Length: 151
Image (cartoon, rainbow, N blue to C red; front, side, top):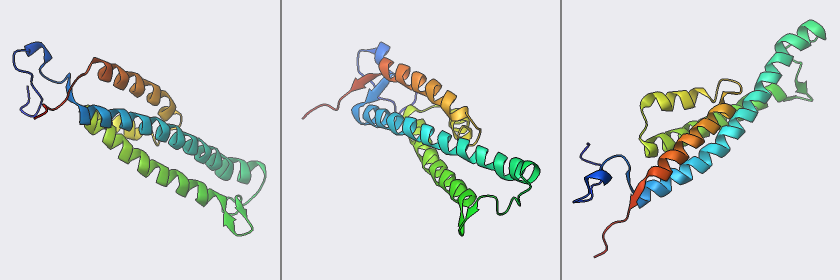
């Protein structure tokens, strides 16, 4: 058992990873809520970006005979760039929230990387969001929350 994990004297069955401080437990719950929202938003923007890429590089030039560089430019506004930038910034926030959740749950680094990958693989964020939510809820339900001793 790591030295930084909380312990309850006389209760060896409650020592270890299932013992949570109130602060960590609350932070993990909040991180999960924000993660769920950001996973959906990032997934939606990624789907829009994917459709935009298919239109811009396959449909517009080959089926419609349009120039791919100007296929989504309307009156000087480049819709393709706006979609890409929007997804990019959502993904940055998604990564920050991913790190927050990963840190609070104390998972292995591979879990962090898989969650991060879900923001750039179409549809993956929707499936992984459900899986991560179930896993997090199960771990938080099994957690024993301890409050600091009042003086």
